[in-house]
Structure formats: structure tokens, C-alpha cells
Image (cartoon, rainbow, N blue to C red; front, top):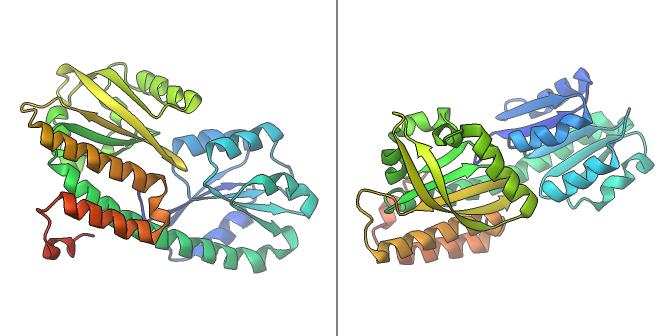
Length: 297
């Protein structure tokens, strides 16, 4: 999910380490989820969004199979590994984003490392949110149903048509999961998410059996694409509305969705691409004036 909160998964049963992290981060807006078994790492990462994983390997190393799954499923995450010696941390050397902290250096090295990682997170997140707000505004009044949903079912965005179809108000969205509107709910959602996770499909057309907030059932013929940026997002689009609009509008909506997909995937990591993407979007949407753009949060 797109958020300013710095989310950390701590894999350790050491409460002193937990309090050390809390003390280092201080007033920084953050959340630390602590688990004490390596078997819980993957379920936790699939269930929520984390920006950093801190693993205490001073007592026990992560198994080879779990390492393999972490490398395949969450290659973009940064991992801080606390180990007693270099040999213990050697299996992590194949990870592209990995930092080692030796047990004897925790109090000296961990604060500076966390500070550096948070600074990078803040820079990327600021650009991410700005561009996301620009795309979101353009999609808001697009004809047809548009939804952006996180892998865990959290609704990142519903445009005006989607809210009207589902009979929900903007302020209600954060309390709902997308599978709340699916017949057989979470069971169907698990099938969909496992399908993409295992087969690595990028796009598919599917008919979703749904019900709005008032339990009125309907079938939504949707095109679903996925984009991965550490986490998996589903971008769902359908022509289902009271008024389907004209083909030209649909083309514009497709362009905006493509721009959003690309921004989530990797363009946000490059400031030049962010600027270029904004210019392209402005060229396609003349209703934005300069004064309005300065009001984006």
C-alpha cells in the first residue's frame, strides 16, 4: 500500500532489540511487527506491506527453503541481518538489498543504518505519493469501473463509477476489503491471488460474481492486470456502468492505467522518469491547469 508509515518486520524474540528499534526511530512515523519464528516470515509478508525486514540470526539461521522463497517473492525488500559472524550471514549475500550487522556492533551500526534506509524510503515515498495523486485524480472520473487493490485485499483506490456500483462512500473504503464484495468472498480472493503468485500472470479477462453493499448481486466482466513492486497490486477495469461512455474516453483510461502500472513497477525510482511521466500525463489531460497541480498533496 502507498503509505508514509515506515513498516518494519522484526524476526526475533529479543525484546531489547525491539525497544532499540523503537528508540532509534523515535518520533518517525513507523510500525514494528515482531514475530519469533521463521515459519511466520512469509505469511506475514504476504499479509501486510513492509519496507524493511530485520532478522536476528544470532541464535538460529533462516532455512535454505525460506531463503529461496524470500528471494523469489520479495526481492525488492531490504533485509538487515544480525549475525555473530560473517559465515552465518553468507547465504544472504545473494540478496540484492542486504545489510549485515554483527552482534557486537548493534548499538553503533544499527542506528546509522536505519537512518540511511529511512531517508531513502522518505525520498522515494514522497515522489510516489505525488505521482499517485496525479494519476488518481485523472482516473477518478474515468468511465467504467476502476479499482486498485493490494494483494492482501486492501482497497488502494476506487474511482467514482466503482463506488457507485458498489454503493460505498469514499470514507468507507479504508474499512473494507475488496473480497467483501465477492460472492464467497475471501475464498475466491485466495484463489485469484494464488493463481497470480504461482503462475506469474500479468493480465487476464474474467467475470467476477459480486454484490454491492446492499447485497444486490451482479456480474462484473473485468480486465485484471498485476504489477509488482515488492508487493503485488491488482488493477481492475470494467466497462460496466450505467453509461459506458465513448471509445475515446476508454482509450484515455487505458493510458492512465498503464502509466500507473509503470510508476508502481519501477519508474518512481528514477526522478527523470517521474518528471517525464508527469509531462506525458499533462499532455493527455488538458483539464489540469498549473494552479490545480500545486494543490496536490
